[in-house]
Image 1 (cartoon, rainbow over the protein chains, first blue to last red):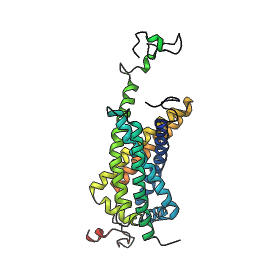
Image 2: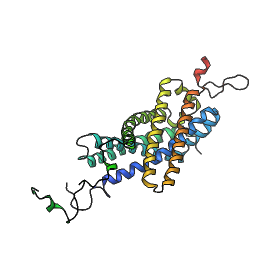
Image 3: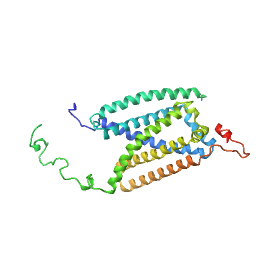
Length: 128
Length: 168
């Protein structure tokens, strides 16, 4: 309502949330392909599964896991926002406020996840 | 803005108002075309499966990474322990199917958006559909044919077996 110049969509919250949703979606999709394949190793042998899943337990992958969960949490919260924009009668009116709510919840969730994941990782980590 | 002459609001003469009857019939929502009903079903599926996946995946991440020993607890025995329970088998099966179809449809949309050449689009979508089918079939077979209590060549229970195998 206060917008006096520029466009309603391009370069603004609507466009950037769409860009974020696409990029995180593609990333999650490719991880999912890998994750089904690595889990399938339980049908090869326990040793094969444990060896490959062990790769998820080194510090570099821990950082990657935080990034992956960050992508999933954004995609999840923004997806719920899309559902509200589509089905809630006031959805289009409050889509920007809902995006800031999504970002706020994302920050809170990611602080919680990152602290917990790092603590659990350091607890059981044998070092390099 | 209470003018009866709507023409006065248009920026230039000779430009028709939006949706003034020049829309190609294939873009109209009235009437039923086959691809239209498929796209509508896909649109609904993205929202229904998306909402379900939020619950499925958040619980999956919590149980596997945030409780117990977190990431260090994940090994063959952990998977075996979970899949001994039909609830987790069903949980992972639902996650597999919904996530692959949700992600597959998202990738289909992206390919349609950016691959402008017909042959490129067909190739990319063929590879996509094949990958989705292979992953869904593979994952489903793994969940249902999984054997938690493996024996070595001398008939002894493997060390990596979960503890409940002792009682079988």
